[in-house]
Length: 337
Image (cartoon, rainbow, N blue to C red; front, top):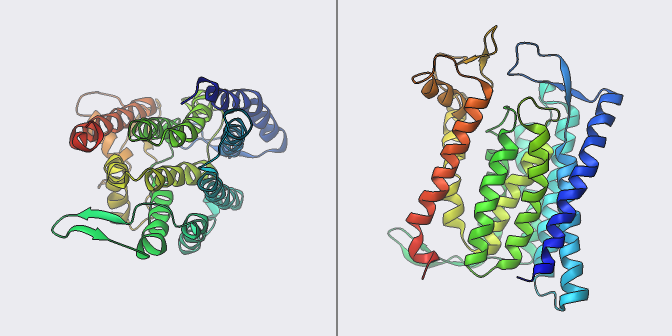
């Protein structure tokens, strides 16, 4: 890890600072605005699909990293893996943007078609045959997955992470904040397990998300859209695959596993939004819980008379941070030798 590599993070960070306000202004000028669903006044006034700027800043930051490695530090041993990573992210960003433009209120792309496109997006990683094929499985011991790892497990991993990361959404700052927490943690894991280059790539996304969060937190001035959630979900899966720490990534994804179970309980048609009271406080919208946001409202109401959107978001952040800390304990033998 050379100090000059911080330039890549700064490029992603300052590109966001320069470009995101312009995106918000342009969205207001052309009427590309969405409703803020967890508010009493649900007027269309929040700029849409700000994830476009996040992906752009991330990609340019990573490309600058490649340039620094090639022309200044010498050597570009991971260039194939990095370009495969960028290809997957860009394909899914395009899918997410198309879904945003078609509009989630008009159902957008069908679930089956999105799953198919997520599988297609994994092809750049499949064709370069990345990852470790030998894994330890409960009751089976050490298993060599061979060709089945790139042909089956990589596409399933990309599709699963992309889809489930998109489930836990709909609250100001939630998607961006979760991305900051998870990718920062996985970047740390990458560094201590010997893939420092992957931590730089992850931190380029974190740098972009930090700026985006400032505009997306309550009260939001821009929404991420599927273009961001698909890209961040895919990056989490790709980091796990390239860094060979799939078990840790799955553990860190526990909140999303819970969210998926609850969403399936609602037949994937119950949204994550809460019931908004006249004073802006939130209640559970159904008799049953169909999402982690609903569960958070239910738990918080046991300790607070009124629960607001920020309370729910911060509660989920706390839960995610706890899961990350537990991962360090559970997997400590493989991390700190």
